[in-house]
Image (cartoon, rainbow, N blue to C red; front, side, top):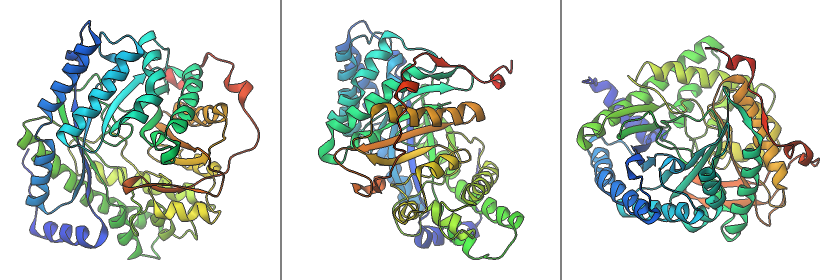
Length: 455
């Protein structure tokens, strides 16, 4: 489908790039690995490497070529693959570990930033293969640089698999321990989901869903700085007008993502999938979702009114962005990762933003508790309970929610963890002192809500 870009749009885009941190956050190539099935685990690992390096060999160079042609920064080039637990023939923990190493080797060979899909879908039950994959997640993430993992433990249709929730609480603690000398960075590459989308281009939760084609190109846009500047120009308008300003700005941002996706699809001869509309912040000054909320009129993100402000922002982004793209998908909304957002970091440090308020905000944002650092001595059962709370929000509200939490080994509330780059840094947040061990240890499945019966 041809896209007509007016010269004024080009000039405006140049201004947004130079002054307002506009960028394409990621071009993500989805690759199916279902045809890599074999009876031999070593052969599967070899097939996985061969397919990824064949399909994605031009991904990075084409991304750089598009960046030069359009003058639009493309920050990351990434790959998502079929959830590894679904590749036929993988059985033992060693099989899954070898595939993780093969994925990392392939990611380095083609030059992508991250590769997602070391994943399992266990919202209703756990197969022996999935159990083995989940067992090696901590070691696999500790021993690889670019592999990301996600596990879907709940859905509106199935309820919450509390056995899987507790297993992931243990896995997160072990991943933190294994990378304690790096501020427990392995946990930043692990996400626990409810209602996981199958076409998400953002890490660490990306994987290539079973309904997807053999290969596909998905785009993740950014642009909190663009929205922030638009809002600041209208400090006294009413809420209806404010929503219109955000909608129009989201349209402009998404148009750039649609253009990049179409061009990448043509150059790589790979189908164009979706544009994810999400406002993805960075630690850079002026590129913050929290600062947008404060520009709405909040003294500090986290104060009373923050959830309402985020609801307005998220809805307006979806409405405006959906008009600018033929295919919208992924998560599409506003991300609120603490470590990756300078305004969020400041709000936590000043005591305005607590984990309880963040949980309330996840009811209306596009994901959930994201890049939250907590004390390293937090019990695995408490981590599981935090996951369960977030899964309940997603299950009841029929939305995607997720938890990416970092129990920072050796750190206590008020300390900081430092990751660098887009992962940023985070203050360690305090948690409720009372335990949840008996609750999360009951086992079984929290039943799906009545709204699951929609057939």
